[in-house]
Image 1: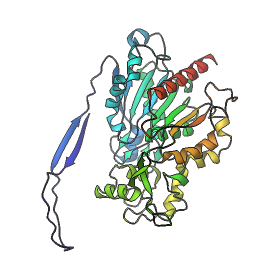
Image 2: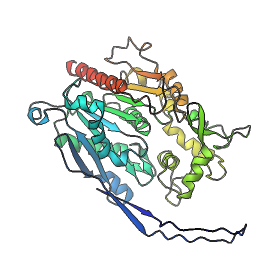
Image 3: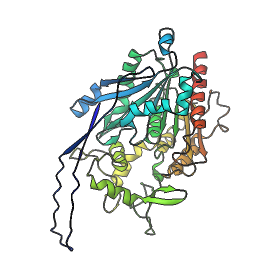
Image 4: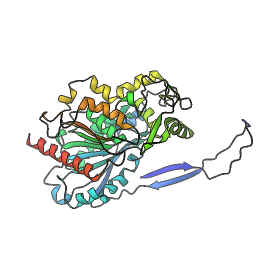
Length: 395
C-alpha cells in the first residue's frame, strides 16, 4: 500500500508593508511516497476488499482493509476451533497506519503477553483501517463519507469471517477503540446491537454535543468565543490550556476544506453535504459563528440524545454491551461529555444486578487522554472480553 502526499519546496517569502495586492505563488510539485509494509508474518496478516456499497456511493473504487494479529499456535489451532474476534479502531491519524498499529501492539508489553500465550483466551485482534478523503470515517453511515458502518457489517466482516476461523455471531464479535476509535465502536454497537457482543472504548470523541469538548453546539452562537469574550480551549496539559478552538481551526483552514484534520473530519462525519458535494461546516472557520441548521442535523449523531430517546435500550439490546473509560483530566476535555454519558449508562456498581457477565459502565478514572491507556487498562479490557465470550458460549 502506497500513501502519497504533495509538498512544496521551501521558498523564501518577503512581505513589504501592508500592500494587500501582494501575491505569493506556491508550486506544489513534489510527491512524497510512503509505502506500508503489508508482508504477512507469523503473527500478522493483512486483508483488503473492494466495497461495492462505498464504491457505488462515491462512483470510484473504495477499498476496506485491516491487519489481523493471530493468536499463539494459530496454525495448530485454526482447523479445530473458531476464535472470538476483537475489532480494534484507532483514533485520529491512527487508522491510515493500521498495519503499523497492529505491529506496534505486538511490540508492546501486552503484545509480549499475547505472543507468550498468556492471554485470557485465544482470539483474533483485527485492526481496522478507516481513513477516507475527509479523515477518520468512524465507521458511521454519513452523507459525506458514505455508508461505512453498513459496509463494515454487511461486506467486510462477512468477508473476513470467510477467510478466518472466527465466531460468526454477536457472541464472538467485540469492539475496542480509543478516542475517535472509541466513538466509532460505541456508535457501531448502538447501530448494530444484535451484530456485536460488546464495546470497550477509552476517551471517546464527544458523546454529548451539548458538551462538544467545551461548546454547547445547540445553544452557543460561536464556537471560538464564549459570551464573555473568552476563547474556548480545545486542549490542555496539566491544567494549562495548550490550544484554542480558533487556533486549531485556523491551522486547518490553511490546508483548505476537506483537509482531513480533526475538525474537518467532524464536519464530514456529522454534517450534510452541500451543493458542491462538500460537508457543510458547523461553523465559519474565520468568525466561529455556528450554523444552527447544521447543529440540528448533527443531533442525529449525538449518542446521549440517541439513548435518551430510547430509554429501554440499555437494559434490553445493550445490556452488558457498553463499557467506557475516560480520564478526569482528558487532554481534549472529553471527560465533560463522558460524565453526561455516565448519568445515562451508570457504572459497575449501579448495574451489578443486571445479570450480564460484565455490566454496562462508564468509568471516570485518574489521567488524561493518553495516560489512561495503561497496561492495566488493556489487561482489564481483554479479561472482560474473554469473560463475556465464555459466558456467551455457555448460554
